[in-house]
Length: 114
Image (cartoon, rainbow, N blue to C red; front, side, top):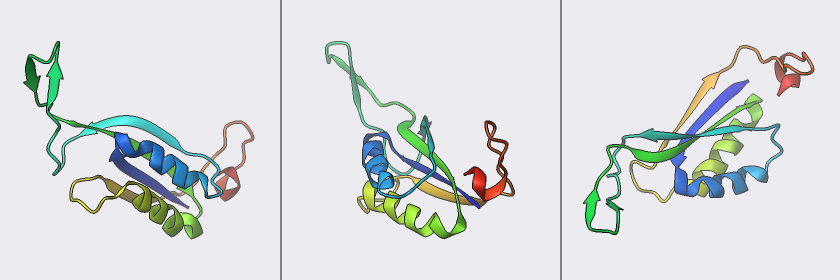
């Protein structure tokens, strides 16, 4: 089993969800995250637009999935195809090994729990 963590621009989160919905996934988790990469942060206007500032961090979203090994390439391809524009600094995908999974409700273990 593998864990896929994809840090993507928050504005493209809907694209990623739509692409992942096409696959037969057991589920996923996502949360809002902030980070600093190669992309400059956008300039924001405060109040009535009289002053501007540049935040220190970009607004991103992190998507987490635990899947069977056979699904990894399909999922990564869907994520990259739905959020990438080919520019540097758009996010990262991390893939790591998972030793075991336990479903709390059913007490199933291993691949049957995902």
